[in-house]
Image (cartoon, rainbow, N blue to C red; front, side, top):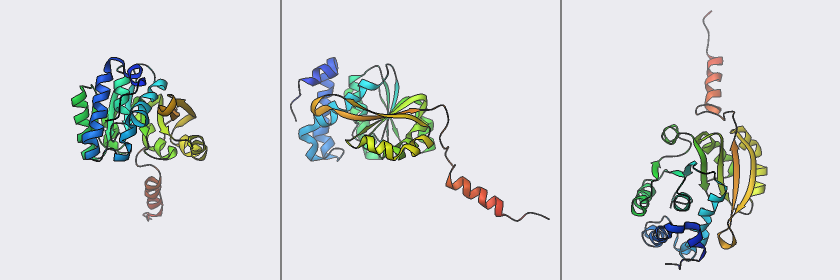
Length: 233
């Protein structure tokens, strides 16, 4: 168990004990179940928990949040602990990780919903609905991530994707894909301080809709088949 850093008290306030319990769960059963790697144990606080909580600096008050590909619960669980005003849903496709997330939510006494599914699936989108914010950490390149997740964001809401040092070049590279998915005004911001600092790409959801399920290649294929089908004479 890594020692609790002084900064944790100011971030989590009266939920510090719950944050410490979360770190203990990650270091024990989380590592045993493979939701966190053993090399990450010495830096659970700065690199993972405080790093994730820092995203709360750019999220609006009382927002609904869907954490896509939540995995070990990052950043969703630290956000729920640091920002109790947020209404959080953890979206995760793998059954064993869903079971882990349900255990964490139960043991920490969090009012958080856990949903099994992928952001690009129609059923997952139905269950999650449209939220004010979608968060993601180490899920996919920003263009692909925007395509998957922006349908989960209400118009005017934001995608907040935790990224590394190459975030700006990734946004530049994927700008067309982001806009095609219905994203506007992608920008790179920095949250937190010291070892807990993180880089976040914020993408606003425009009023226009991105591609709907079934559009694109499959839809074009149906049109092509209809065009080539013989007609009665």
